Length: 437
Image 1 (tube, rainbow, N blue to C red):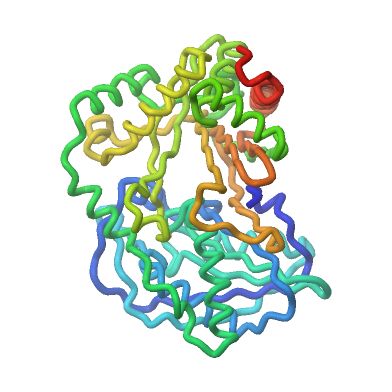
Image 2 (spheres, rainbow, N blue to C red):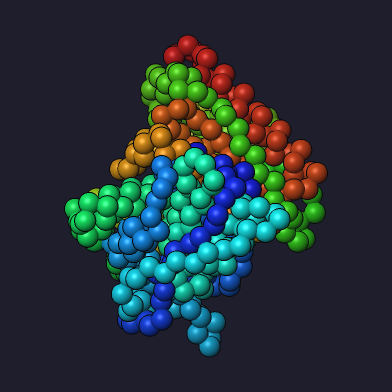
């Protein structure tokens, strides 16, 4: 799956329609995760969603596609929940009581074209407090395949969720076309709300973990890590700059993995080694970044949709791959405990201007593999930003990265230089003999 952005995604010009599963009644109250509370508590705003785009052979009947999407919504409990805020400003989550019934609408495509119309539609339909905050969109060009976009606010999905949703939609569509109920062979998936409840019920984190978090925040002046090079004036969010780079093809990636194995580490540890070296050389400082880690530690969560991600911190001051391995292990431990009680004494998770986040996704390790002919794309939203986020994406076709950062002259210069050093470092490691160091 290709990682892209709504402003860069492959999208044809064509008719635009969408399907929602309306929510008019709510039922029982559900627990809100720490990350959901932070995200939704910031209020409705554009650019908080993520989605997956697929190409399907035309024609696709709206009725069939709508029934299939309703079946997917019925399977994944988080898609049948809605957020609200109370009089005290607290975030609340309730279960939808309505039956999953699809409702289609047509949307005008103005002079700016289909992409702009789709972005405006999804920014509104998938805002944190929308009811529901997810939508199936369909782009039908005059010729060629149609494009289906499944989008949802981040409070309900993560990157892992997207191929699961795509697979379930395709299975459900096949069921509908065959005269079967959608999702005939797939039982309801495990509930993310139950995951939230279980995480909150776990024993308190060891004292050393809480103390380590305290030192990390103290080292950052009371906040999460920031990008180590100048970013310019970040008093207000700046229009984002998004860049995607092809780093390694399939053969070069295989050589890099062989190199990591010869060094006694995994691919991620070797990647951290390269990132650390680039940061030390360009900034003269250790690598410090927020690192999202997943919490699908139990097999029943592997087929579930939800925000099974929480933030940890990756710190590494030594470019030796073994130090990278130790840094990854520490980050995984820091992110394996409920963060709300750990960070409560610090006022929650303090997000500074210039916050630096690194994300790593190896699609080969996910339980769902989408056929190449779907030309699947992970599509992120677009919004002004003050932070720097870099995604490293591994797939059968190699390794590519995507970066999002403020569009200031200083940020463009700094981030592009860092990305270039990282790309050169990875290619150098892939070209080295297995035991060369």
